Image (cartoon, rainbow over the protein chains, first blue to last red):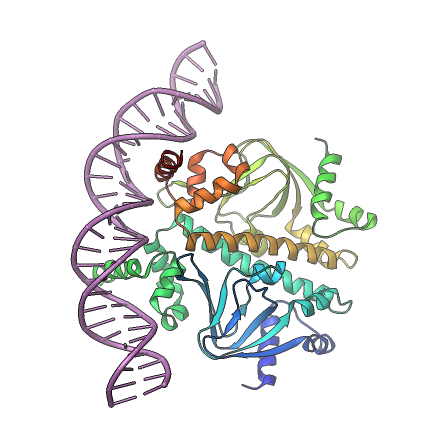
Length: 202
Length: 202
DNA sequence: TGATTTTATTATCTTTTGTTAACGTTTTGG
DNA sequence: CCAAAACGTTAACAAAAGATAATAAAATCA
């Protein structure tokens, strides 16, 4: 996938939020950078400020943190056609708490924090970019709202059943011990949950 | 607290995000409404679209959902000087999943969804309002990021200890069974956690 | 290919949590 | 002020989850 096609995909995505004129898009393009990561490379690292906000044109990433005992805990995943960033770090320009690691060779179109600030303050583009930023933040806010709701009102088993229903993409591509972390349980426990579900229901 | 003072408090708050000129503020003021709720009244209700985005000038609210078995599960709280809304419902104009209920007599300064759209598209104010919206969404996004992180990497006991450290306001004003829900455990379990902590540590 | 690592399951044991119920205390509201 | 409701704790038991270790299958990669 060449850069032209990557830009097309990104424009198509971003225009689900805000539509740009040809001139505006031309101006916006100047502030984009292409990044390619090999499998296991990091998009963001704990302790470092995440300077980039990325759109995945091809590939996938895993968000994880490291407990005091050294164990990696997987928080989240992002796939082709989705945005990725260590948001809190990017937004507040603080050291990231999490790592973001490529699960496979992955390509991104990125906006750096400084370029994003330029775009937000650009007289031509600022209003639309602010709206884009708002709609993206609102989108992820809604995702988080659902996720917290699930942690509070559902058992791990219920959360897994829900994921079985509407998380097809994730389940097929991701090792189960990552899914376990994502659900907030240990891999051993998820294995037992699976046994309970699949021996009972068939 | 009269409406003048409420407006002052709201302006002071909103200007931690975006600063307005006198003219801009005058225009913005026109789109605000004052709401007063008695204790146990609802700011938002399940199944109804949340039309309002509110700033609490005095009082507090509790967010809760209702499980299939009829039990209320408390998600969150907001206090004087904070914003409140059933965000997903407000943003997407979908029926709310949660109730927002006044814990005491509570006053709000509100922007309706339709007025917010007018402000966002207002040539004079639009850019700043978009920025305000973005920064608010980013703020809550960061809060949620932390909260999900806590659910995934910490035990209920660890989450409670953390809350003891930096949740002074919440702990003093809120019944413990609400705190239990907030932490993702049952009230009985929180009582045991407290026993473990306070008999061990003194 | 063959050795190594990763992954998923299972077993055992311990700890924690959920559930239900009982009990006193406090708060609420008429 | 009094009755009712709400609240927090505790107990007893069942269910679930964590921790650890062993095992076998699958994936990785040199």
